[in-house]
Length: 73
Image 1 (tube, rainbow, N blue to C red):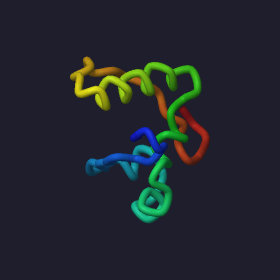
Image 2: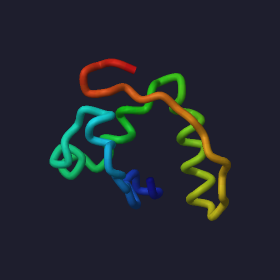
Image 3: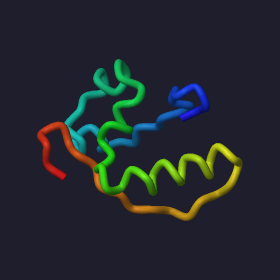
Image 4: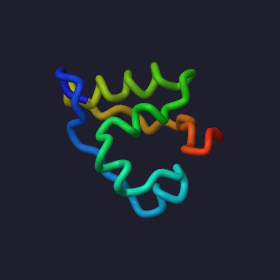
């Protein structure tokens, strides 16, 4: 996200639609959908990594949980 709260760039790799349960159209219509899927307990680490990226840093890879469209984690 940039400082205005808008997504800078979101890339959806093949398979993401099957994993999350959301459609390509849902992603296109909701630019911040990915953010709403981040599991609450993992949100701080993900947002910290985004802040690092926006500062031009290269953060280490992380793993975080998502909440799928059907509510499963």
